[in-house]
Length: 277
Image (tube, rainbow, N blue to C red):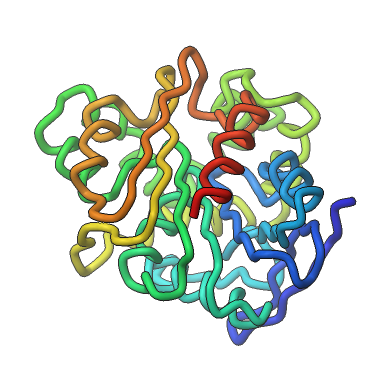
């Protein structure tokens, strides 16, 4: 059974889904754009059955209770701070961290800044940020794949374009790889006043000020070969950015929306990873 939680923090109250016993090994799962915590419902439910305490929050801007207006309040330090605030509120001194897409980027930065808090790290799709930055500079393919980020930083214009005609452009982002009922839910959430702007503020907050270093904690990185956002250059280079135990898994013929397009495969790899660390 999946529970609905409200997690109060100094920044506001985060909505979340959860499953598993309160005293189970804690796992925090971070969603990407333009999704929500329910992206992880298959993984949360399975982990709960296996005795883990799995919690997936609607992150900053996606939870109505934590939706600041200024783009500057969506910087990576704020997002990492949210992860720790949620874990603190749940009473988790050490936990396993999982992320996809933007949630994956936050997971990488959290592992870099606070390795002592993490038992393990698992990231889906998103390469190590330093590997991605290098690929964007040196690999024309990755530069082209990342061009949408510049477009999405254009305030207001992007929101109007994404939501017009029944949110057709927003729906097309999913490339028909996510169940229609889930897409409807994401569109409904992001059609609320201010919600899409808040989600896009993750792109508009500016690049992180500091440099991210090599990751020490045991890491699983899952990349799918048909990912439109992240090419193979950064995906393969990620191995050079982890000094702790590292496992790289490539899922063939699956899009960027791998968590929902291939939920059993992702869950199986995640459970193997957790059980080995």
